[in-house]
Length: 236
Image (cartoon, rainbow, N blue to C red; front, side, top):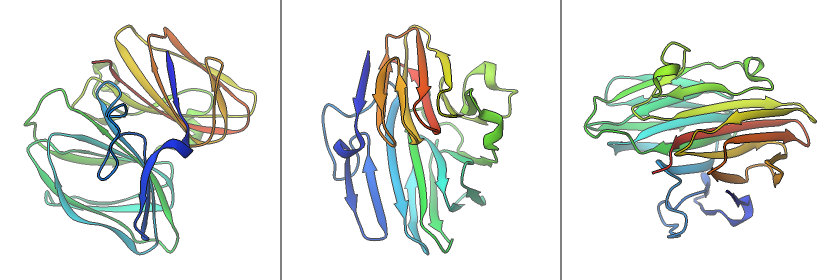
């Protein structure tokens, strides 16, 4: 089954400095049919104006992954971590027992991010933060694991998560096809950051979302050059 969520149907808000679109219920947007996809709880599509950002605020018991699409984001937290993550790269924060952090766009241009929240496998874990560069050339025509809690990804260089799941990315040239297996009992959510594709024959445009379950594999064909982000988690 594939459930398409066109970008124009997403919830959202315009705060002036922040233009946000929500694939799932979040903040002032509530849709009981869009609460989560398996253990995936939040996928926000945020545009942050230059020189603005999220002031210090707390989180706990959530795995938070930030995929930077354009610009850069600067992170600071109560654990003493600080870092700047640029377009195409990723940062993760396992909130665990609790952490206070801020996220600012200190760049002279708009920053665009996907912010992804995944429900952890266990509560009360030790919090941590990390970031890493992921050159796009290494993910052409195949998914690269960016962040994961799966044992098989522990030595691949993926950022560590406290969940049996993974965040992956790929780039496709127009006309290219890739196939990603999806094991029984798993759920996937796919968003093209750029470009248009078909997913098992179903059309998906830029920044649309596709929830996928009960499919043995995901076959993606690019109608134009595309940049893809995929989350794979437990179905329940």
